[in-house]
Length: 543
Image (cartoon, rainbow, N blue to C red; front, side, top):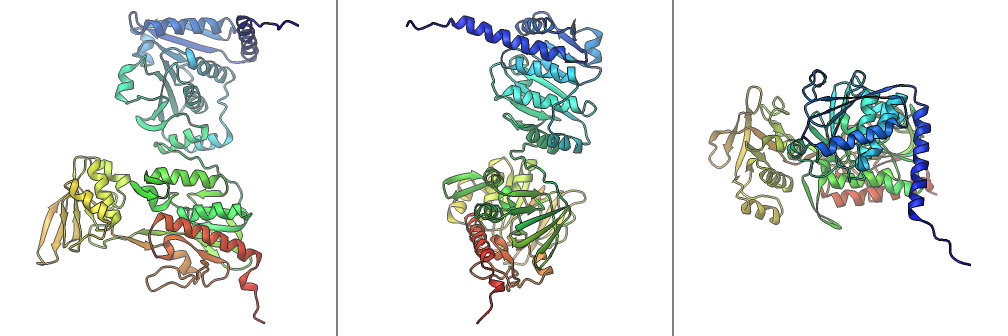
């Protein structure tokens, strides 16, 4: 029997006809008319203008709900709606702030159709989670998303941006910009890869983002790489509540759930703890060098596959018992066990001006604040790995940094100190800061020479402090957990504290302040908790 041959052109025609019929059916059900305005200028981006006309003409053949008008850039309506680039499409501009610079062709034809459907149905299509995030935003957001006709990832991002503008036309404006149609702005915003998204002229996304992740970035006005869904419930029951979302806590969550426990991680501040603000992490097993934030993102993404995470939630009290009652600022947990992985906080100098000027030139995070001091003079205080790493980071980004250490030698690793010399970063040995001066911002510091006792004033725009950490043991102290002489949580080899059912792990235990150590302790503690829940040591009786 002869093989039947299929003509590819017939197949393509059939697929196109099916798609057209489906679009007709969708457009037919739209209840709202969509006014479209095209603004153009002769001899400027004419291929884009012609492509736009053709696309709009083709869509208008499928629905009568589209009205279309074209005007030159010098028309009074262009002035009314502040249009200055050719070609620009405005979508129902009396109702929404949505515009498109370029042509809705290629991959972006999908975006164009989805925008029309959103407007025709007056339905943004945002998920409930995404809508909740959007409703938390109170200030206007002017969003620009840079795309190209050949980018397969751009439609997802562009549609997500427009969804926000449709849902909140009073708050969000959306502009889709083809990088080839508007090369000037693409260069100005350094949009050399697409999709790339800005809000209020701040970069908030590179690449395609889910609705929830985009809106999380839009809310924060900074790029976010992890979206953590909110969890409902005023009272939750668990086998284990982990207080602290650093490396120890996140790892404990993974191992606990893998062992079959119902676990939750509660973190009041930034997930990842000190790692999140570390510029560069070196020699974490398997990674010669990695940014601290990138490492945290990997840890959080991994943990989210297993454990419920409650970010921005502060534990107010812990009441030992059966069950243990953990109260946060949002809910109550009834749990069989608790793991304290609260870490450590930045140690302060405790000198005049430090607290008053904190956030006004005094900083404990070079990653967060270092870029603000590019081209300016700062002092980095400390002599350990953190201080030297921070000094190297700021030097790399163009900050004029001088390291100040109260001893005659640095405590940092040899490789780090060698890099100080290679980068010509000055070090003031045997000096300590006794006062930070300035009216509204840091203007100078008073330095005392420990060898001579002499003091001098040093002009500076900023003071970055990295002199170690204090264990975060407030919760532990409240419930009577025993501490060591150095103020860390006292524990046995299985990470048990003196209160049955409460354990510890990570920097709050003291010892080596290394990420890999914290990760190991988190895994150990989770396995100890699992074994103890099977056979509770606190219920055993001596024969």
